[in-house]
Length: 172
Image 1 (tube, rainbow, N blue to C red):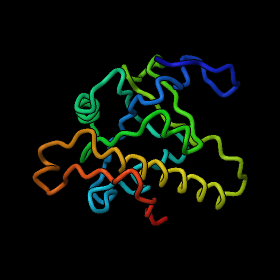
Image 2 (cartoon, rainbow, N blue to C red):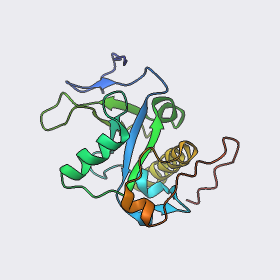
Image 3 (cartoon, one colour):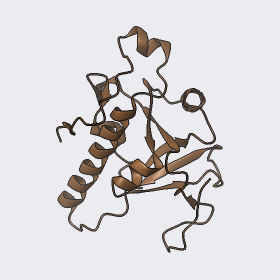
């Protein structure tokens, strides 16, 4: 299901996600303003500014609907869940970790690490993060939403994945 690597940046009670490469990681889109033509924008995939971590839920543990409901049950608000695969994360130059064994984390919780940035200046770091987030948003658009609640469907959101050969038109 997953492999662990022997790198110094893997924290205790974390496992780096490597396999299977097609496992979906569900990201909750918390604001309809983070959608453009029913597709997530880079804002939906920006990591928390202090930790450089983007929270997701593992598809091997939770369905997209269960991940959505868990998010709501814990006080969150979401217009739906969009998936990226473990391979998508790696193709974007990022890494994903299961941290569900940590205190306060639910079963299936994981995060995508934006800590691999080799840039040192704040501007370069912000641009690097924005580019990676845009790449993830584009890849999520190719899959289409994994779960849309009735309220989002009633508001006009529909499942419209991009054709696989459409170039990334995400404006950064």
